[in-house]
Length: 209
Image 1 (cartoon, rainbow, N blue to C red):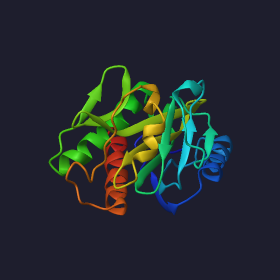
Image 2 (image 1 turned 180 degrees about the vertical axis):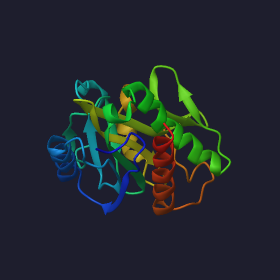
Image 3 (image 1 turned 60 degrees about the vertical axis):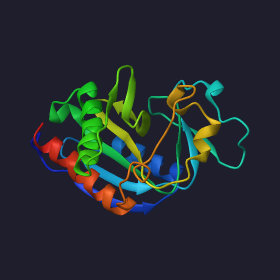
Image 4 (image 1 turned 30 degrees about the vertical axis):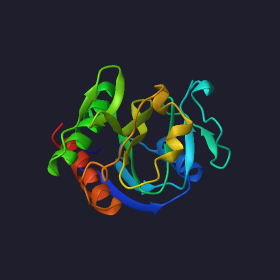
């Protein structure tokens, strides 16, 4: 059996469709056993709105019928994924690592906060509104699904993308919430670079948890 601090396998999947990726996460989680290594998947999605379990349709999308809308099993409300956004899916056995769900949410947020800090950007949390905020706007959203102590889904960091589709929704269920991206915060690093650094940040936090 793996020890709690065992390293994660990091996979860089490129740009992949949302629904097959979500199905692959479900299948991975369903078939894993006590000896299955944890994995971090780093990727981008084509444009898609996703609604978490219990998401209120009143939060949108409004007046936008070009982008598919998919209901999924993660927590949280509606968000948007698209090219130029780093998505990090964490397929972890939290129970084996002795990490509680709230602790892992904080860990995901901290990985983003630390990453932005590498580039001199101050970021932080907001009470009651999971995610990471900088310059009074949301730069990263997160949502998880946990089954029998094993989680999947993860965090999405806006890097250099078209933010217009966010205007058709109440991001994460908050009307009027402003969103931003690392390019607007003065970070010129690419999606590929930030994805690799974010994966390394989270893997490091997990190894020392």
